Image (cartoon, rainbow, N blue to C red):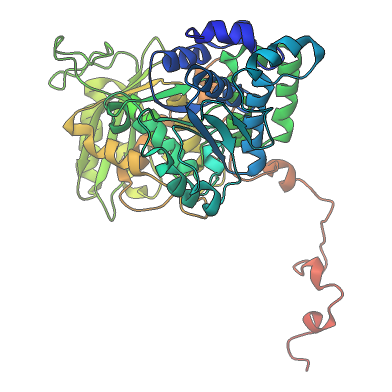
Length: 497
């Protein structure tokens, strides 16, 4: 029983979990538990094996120490019951072929597992209850699993948390798919971020375990892949990304997941001056653009103007090398700066906020290629630019120096959020706008093989709708909505009573 992998191989029915089909991250979780780690945050796709894995851990822990008490909380009673039923299926498997195993476990158990609790003779137990304030305030436990954390009301999380407080050997497992728009989605994503090395939860001993469908052999069978292809036609882009691929949602409070932003910023290498830690050349006193250079501009009519400049190297990585920020929108002064940097770094093209029409024209008159980006457009507007930036961030293909020069960009990207209506909040976001303008110059359709076009906001083929003549009417009432046809009160002329 000391070897958890041996326990899985010998005592867990293959129909529940086959170690040969386990991902590397699933093995990592099992071994971390065996090695004494206590706090875990687990993110995986739907049917990715996270619930059965925690059930295996709960059974192994309580068999090794039969005074151990393990409590299961979830967003719904049925979800908690599924995890508990997995525990029962390991300790009391059905079928005549498992008769000997049931007799073996019977020596440790007080009785056959009941509907909501399995009790050991030594005093330990595994149990679940409905996610209500009254139920989660009842028992004192040692181990606790919060299954589908994003679905659990925050009040239940707060009331259930102290259940382990008096334990001498507490363990916690927070597991979930990062489903968009649920009660605790933002909190779950923040917890994942704070488990990064050097972040607060990591310093307290929390471990983040994440895997996606591509990491799980049982989700890459021919049948599973066929179903996944079908799902792309029935699910929204975000639902497919989170539920099937196991990725992070785009619309989850923050415009970009904080993990992406933190990974993008790389500190200078103290042992190798002139380079970032990841090997990207960076000497602020002598910048070198080693690839196709572009620039992004957000004109500051009620905030600072921001210029961001970078290049895409041979390996496909986009390096942001320079950030210029200043007050005012003088066309000639900023055009001088743009012209200077274009010549010095051999920049190919600039992408700028279309609201600065005079400023953009001044740059154009200098013979510099500049493309205006109209933020409010339905197509190729702000949401499309955000989508392009998200594409490259999710591929981990953007790097920026983690230096004071870029501190404003990092701060604003980390706090950039959407309101309750799904729209991006305005204010203190000028460097974010410059950032997406810059990245819009690298449309994935032209730079990444087999990349899907970034989805445009809205639905329907606008060109097809423009050429749809079925409802054409050249009569004097062509302007009148069809809903008015049978309403004489609305149809009468304005001078009639």
